[in-house]
Image (cartoon, rainbow, N blue to C red; front, side, top):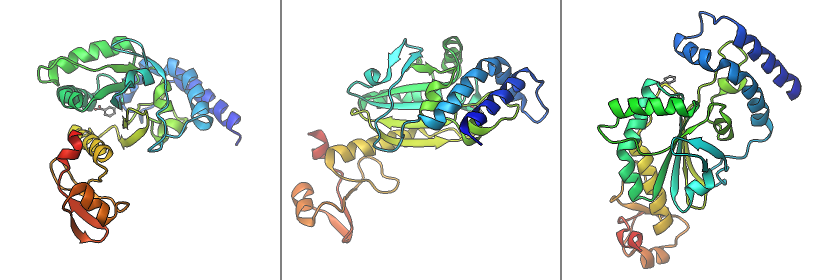
Length: 279
Ligand code: BEZ
């Protein structure tokens, strides 16, 4: 089927869905969001589906992070200006006022001082408007931040433009033409470096909350690797031995790191490179 025809069928199906009663098979949970958002999402989804099919930039590790302008709870931003000379974690959530998301946002707010120490900004995203975000933040502060004031911006993306740009949707949300009426965004995490390159992406389903310690651990690994020219083994945390990459000869490793231990010629460990990290 041609893409134009396919898109127009999706539009037709969504127009029908927006006006139709919800079927019993669609959960009440999704239904409450659909009631609020269905009408607005019809036109936007058609636009987004066709854009997503033809104009999406690559989101590979090492790709430039696509720029965008957005409204956030701390005011409007240009994403690349927001990044500036910092590392940035851009992460999405299915929707405001949902349980798992509430715990995640609270946990990231509590850990923000650790991200600050690593020159890393946090930027959340969910597919709701600013007013909704503002009300939700009050709830997050009440139940999930352990007394910390909420401390980073959340993008308002009710039309899912940025969600589509960064592919923060699942397979069903790009292709289904049933009566669901609204697409939740998934739990995506992007770590973007000061050169505005994507350095990590992680995708989680809506049903599974992320692990803040893992996000911080990968950031530590990336920053350690960039500064000291090492890689990090399974389950590594800062302070533990690191790996000398295969591209470094034994002679160069000795000069750079002093001692190293060769378990195999291709698997060489050296001490946590504290001195190199301080430079
Ligand atoms: C949650 O945050 O709990 C959630 C959101 C959307 C779908 C499923 C769970």
